[in-house]
Image (cartoon, rainbow, N blue to C red; front, side):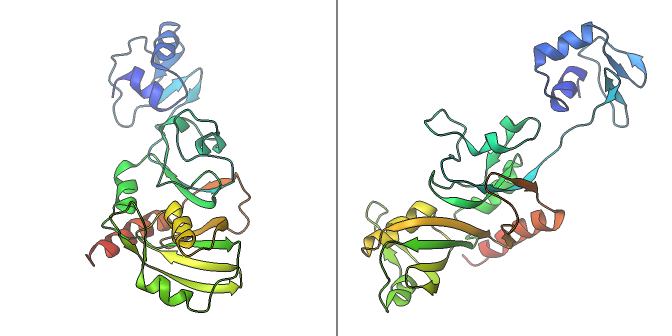
Length: 240
């Protein structure tokens, strides 16, 4: 890898800033001052900037407890993006794995590994997602059967979305869905005449939102969690 690119990949420096610090003689490779951005950094080389050893950031995988009022998008909008909540280097490279509506809270996965992300969100890999749903009105007694049969949504080619639910109380349920998104959940209940007051994502595949992770806080996924999400997506895809 070129030295100027290495500097950008391992720090917050832009390409023009990397060229500047190189020309200033602030960068060494294996103890030797290198001013050429085209210098090839080899595996095992020690690169230092102003005496601090740099290393490539690598691929990252995080869970974030999304608060209401933030969007899962990096595009300009009237709401701040959830990525801005992360205190990490090069956060502009990160993307959310799927999206939650601006008023939906809870677990959202964040990564810069595009292949891993697409394995989870691919339509053929119906990964379980569990939501806590709070409704404006009490549910009828037969609602479980209605969801098992599938709720047809207008504008979705009359596609029936099925889900399983467990009642918590008369206005709160825990719903598990595979091929739907959070706005589908809201539309499913609205189609039955029960507006959703609050929606909170608790689990994606085998990964459960940490109980002690406060809204706006995040942590890196463990290697087991990263592998488990990819594995659960592979298993889901084999059933098509």
